Image 1 (cartoon, rainbow, N blue to C red):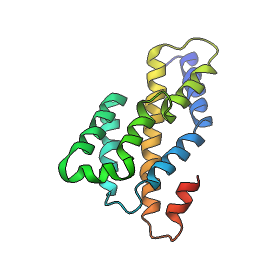
Image 2 (spheres, rainbow, N blue to C red):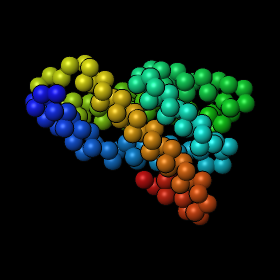
Image 3 (spheres, helix red, strand yellow):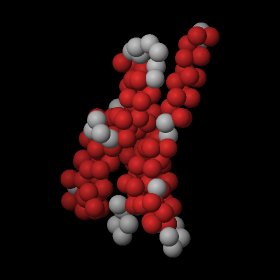
Image 4 (tube, rainbow, N blue to C red):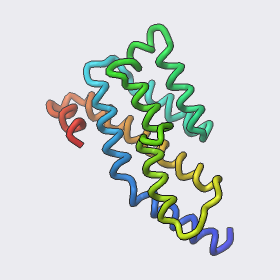
Length: 153
């Protein structure tokens, strides 16, 4: 790896880290939709696994829509429109993944290749799904105000 490539990669990772707060806040709000649901941590872990395996936003959205459509499991993913909210956060131009990606890319001094834009989108999606799972675990922890704290983020 060349020195300039390494510097570019480090700068990109630093830019992503600077834009994490909205990712965490969106994950907290979406996790709060699961209050009083029968969602299990393993179901969210499955989404993370699909994300890591595919590294593709459309594939992850497709998997979530599959979960929404399933007979028994679908009811859980439909709870308070949770599944659709997650898909919107990932794919929609107004979703947190796309919004934060645009902020990172707009601060770049030169035009980045689409491959880099895809990498940034994937990283934000991966972080969003990871924080979503963490927030869900906190909400289900039994801490009296956990779900309220998530809604307030």
